[in-house]
Length: 154
Image 1 (cartoon, helix red, strand yellow):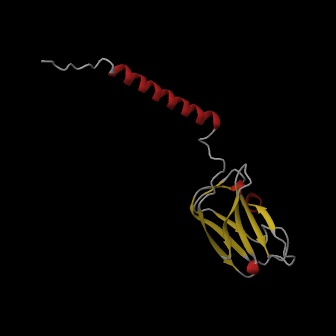
Image 2 (cartoon, rainbow, N blue to C red; image 1 turned 45 degrees about the vertical axis):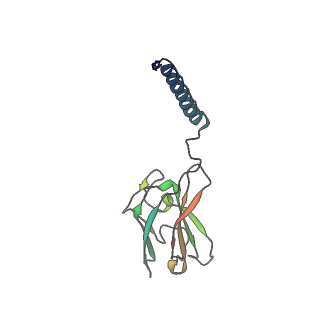
């Protein structure tokens, strides 16, 4: 009568070869991601933010834009576009740091405000009652931009 013998001698080298191949593939994939920058995103993601707008009509004609909630914003990435606020009807683009107390490197956090008034914008006869005001985010180092808030809401 014949007895079956267990022959386990070839199992260990085969498993070792499979593990070495798997490690080599993982190292090659990691190196490819690093060298070809596949792990980086090409475009900066636009922030998600909510603004509250408070308008005081009349002689003061003040518009206060308050960062209510959402991502923190770098002031240098923000532009205020005002159209229809003066008789010429020209769209005026203003860097936020030029019309507020913030500098370009400042961060606009929840609760911070930007105030637009005749004193903060160039030109006389400012009338915001028929104006459109947009807060525009411009991606740093990219051509990407996005309107974060338009007043009055369109």
